[in-house]
Amino acid sequence: MPKVYGSGETWHVRFLLDMWRQRRPQFDGLICACIVAACVLLTYPVAEMGFQDDWSYIRTALEFARTGHFIYNGWATAMLGWIIPWSALFIKAFGFSFTIVRLSMLPVTMACIYLFHANLVRFGIRSRNAVLGALTLGLSPIFLPMAASYMTDVAGLFVIVLCLYLCQRAVAAHSDRAAVLWLCCAAASNVAGGTVRQISWLGALVMVPSTAWLLRRRRGVVTTGISLWVMSILGVLACLHWWNSQPYSVPEHILQGPVTAHMVHHFVGILIKSLLCLLLLLYPILIAWLLAARRLNRPAAIRVGVTALVLIVFLWKVRTPDDWLAPWLTHVIQSLMRESGEFPGVTETPWLLPVRAAISVLVVTSALLVGEALLPLLRSKSKNTSRLEPVMRQDLLWLLGPFSLSYILMLLPRGLYALLYDRYLLGLMPLAIIFLIRLYQQVIGDSLPAISFLMLGAFGFFSIAGTHDWFAANRARIVAVEEVRATGVPKTAIQGAFEYDGWTQIEAAGFINEERIEVPAGAFHKNMRMYRLPEKCWHFFGWYAPAIDPKYLIVSSPSSCFADSTFPPVTFRTWLPPFQRTIYVQQMKHDRK
Image (cartoon, rainbow, N blue to C red):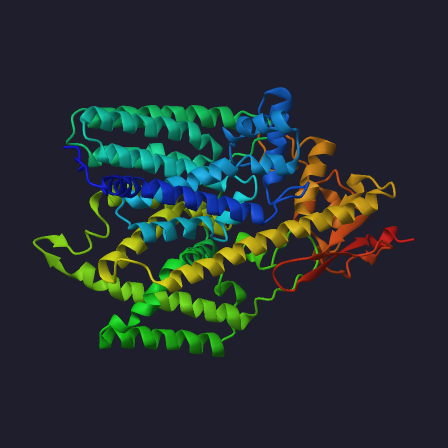
């Protein structure tokens, strides 16, 4: 029944307040999206060269804008899908530049954060906590750098979050017909959207069937769910068949060889580190549990205190390998900490081992406090109903539980045969954020404390400043390369490091020399030039770029592998210490005059 307002002087005030309460979630979500977009722009993501792997994807977008065809180049393991024609529109409208292509993804970033905030609200997260949860994702040191780039991680997460939102609408639908329509939209959008990053297809293959099972008592839902699942499988197989037949695509096989005991040992370590890194990414929420430590009973407090003390003594007395300290997993966070191996040279990091050890202890201690709060809920039951049910309510459990387990299973081969990068944890952050906030609301209080927002601010500053410095270093590398090229040296005689060399290799040879290329057969040829250098002087991307025969090299610090050149160093300023950094130009020793 619609609300009836009186004719008094304050009726319009009550009307506006009601409108505000109804629209506040949408307004809060829009504010979160705008904050993240503003932070991306603050990083000043301007550099006419690649950022991580995005040079390969940008090249495909440029070729699509020129020819209307998908043209891969031997580096992308992601299909790229819809972001290629999307960005080609921006290239057609504004002309080509690396910056234009990257900024074309800003609306996708905003939509991802807006929808995730809506997901949080629909799962019963209170408004203040929903804002914190959305920004914990959007300002994290793996989301923000990826949002400033043309990498597929944020676009893939957007597809997952969209599928989750549509499934939530199906669960909340008032009629059977509406539930069926929402499920159809979820499956169709996910099959099409998942072409950007294949793991996103778990939405149609797992999340939609799980939602259909949850709604199995509604008329027509089971039949629709089975039909959608079969059609989704057929659609995914058709896309994969097309992808595997494309010249210079790089398919990834689940099983890549025999499994040894050493690989299993490595795999167990990777899983533990992945959990710890995920907890680190969630620390703006996790830190709230430190304040709740006073609620612990005496035995629980003793357990947490003793464990933390043992960990401190262990880190102090035992020479712990660096990779067992925060941030645990390699790639994005370590690059923000100036530990990137993307171009030669020794890069000093201001993150001293005691600092990393202290962060590790705080993360583990906070996780132990969460475990102590969770333990009574797991043990206590009333009439066969666990007290954990308000935290992991049925819709949350079915929509995100099977999806998250499947997501982890799909990452296992990566952890077994290679490395798990920290950015792969983006797909698990939504479930973890929702679970932690709901657990806090159930056990501790309605609103997360102010210290969570302070920690979010610290994380946000680190993400913004680190990404800004990353782009600043790339701009300095371009300056160094152009100084060399101004003397008539061709690009193929300059090793500008991973992202720069990838573009040079494509321009010179048409594709990256990747041994996993299956079409055309025989495209890969081992780069024998690398053996001219001592092993300690190898740079990993040299094997992939045989078209580059470097006379000059851009390095982060002078190396004994090479000789000094006559070109002056390039200095640039950063937001994180040390605030002035330098890039050097060296040359091959046998080329020195």
